[in-house]
Image (tube, rainbow, N blue to C red; front, side, top):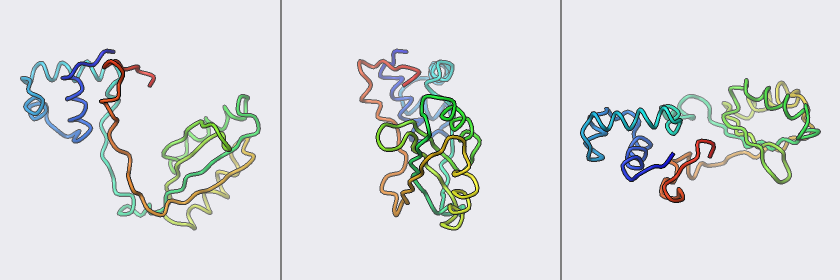
Length: 164
């Protein structure tokens, strides 16, 4: 999908505040409400906008420990890796999972209440996942920058792939 300057302004505004009403959004980007809503719906239908989310305070919810976990699987191109991927999908403590290059095969971001909670999760769940051969844990001491907006200005020629 090719994005023009108005689409980029819409996306930037929604990344900043997804609770904007259509009227507020239209006013901010300089369109009337009807064409603005039409563009938002096109972006949603194309999958460029995949949903709207609230940012929650982990510490305030009692989920004060973030752990980055490198996981090696027995064979990362075979059934063990596929079984691992499927199992990870059902773990609410794992808020992201990436297939990576380097020492680990997968990098997980795990959120738990505390060190005892991570120990329970590690021993009771992670080590029992199919195909796991090694786990390395790195504990976040401080969040310097949380997940931020995507850098829309870096899209080549204004084009965007749905699979990016």
